[in-house]
Length: 446
Image (cartoon, rainbow, N blue to C red; front, side):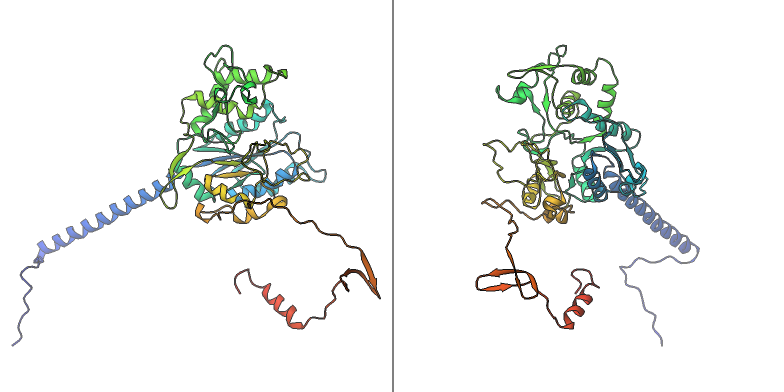
């Protein structure tokens, strides 16, 4: 006799018949609803996380053929199809005679639709015109949706890859950075004119108050290179377009005014690119960073100190400067000024990592191209902790020798008790064969 198996008493009984069918359908509907709702929630979370990474409007400025060539490489390094890019070419730039401006810019733009360029301002060092490209970039950017505005020179270079940069900017959201380190005494915050000693030239360069009809307006020093919010761009542009506003008065003073400098006399207000934006920021009511900010690392999520968003070595010509070694290249920059900015390279990588900078300048492949091999990175931990050696570094210069002739051989050099002539070897065929095979593979694949 076949015995029927009985279900254990502790298991729920599945209803049968019509009631059972209805119950099963209801249960299935509940499961599907949970899956749909869960998927929607996951999708919303994913989209929210993607949207949380800010959209960046970049301005890249170039003034000559080398910086325009560098700007092309820079755009490749910072390019993200989600961002906006504006390129300003100095009006003094002389286009090549054998091709049109459009053809010259083609390698820079590379057909990318989110890049716009213009040649508008004739920029003069130390004058208000230094600000014109930045203001053009801000106005152009405000015609679009963006969260952060960053201006770069053609000889700048990113520390982070585009995705890592956007993740880091998310951690810095709402803050406005208008300083560069490590030379800024107040770190990430602009330095007030009254914070300098009485004899310091930056205190003597501006009166206090900065404008006679603004009794509380103090001049603030910073950098022309910035990482700022959309709100700051809106404030600057709207203020400039409003007669009687602080920004409007400052522009008029920088263009038409003069100031008295002890020992020099009456001169035009100097370096408005380094004081206009910091001063406007400090009067805007918008968020200003602390001298050192503590932020979450975008990879480890640990809290870390941020000391500079821009790493620019400046003002190291003084005998009391703590930085003594630096790259020089008078051949590349005949107008190299003793106060900088100086070229940076691989020996600066440890300090760049320490400051957790987002960008560095000035860079050149003709000074130290190794920095382009290392940067940009996805993680600050990937930057080697390289520092300048404790003893001065000097590059060897090629030695010159008197050459002699030995029989039919020319260009030989007498070394001790022998004569060394240019090599003409009869190497085995396996050497050329092995080299030919090696060239078929990318480095590291053999």
